[in-house]
Image 1 (tube, rainbow, N blue to C red):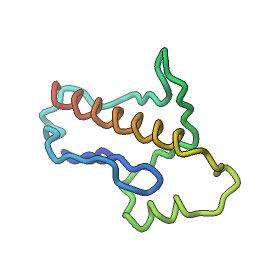
Image 2 (cartoon, rainbow, N blue to C red):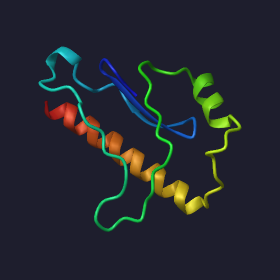
Image 3 (tube, helix red, strand yellow):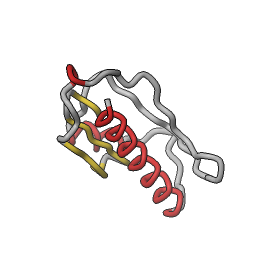
Image 4 (tube, one colour):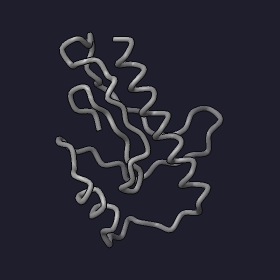
Length: 102
């Protein structure tokens, strides 16, 4: 989630990273216009079911999304979850770095 000068990343309804050190929106030269989800050249990560919302969700809303009984959920092994968690954390760090440079 990126709102104003605050950013955070959630995986399965759990906060895995955040920062309050992003420069204010007015001082950034560029808005984020593209997202990249997935692995790089030597990665075997598959990212499924990415949700983008037009507002921050509360902690309870995030948990409700994660706990909902829907057909797209699948039982992945823990290594897949760990890879996705690392990937999203890297995405968050990349967004923070991009914003810090702008």
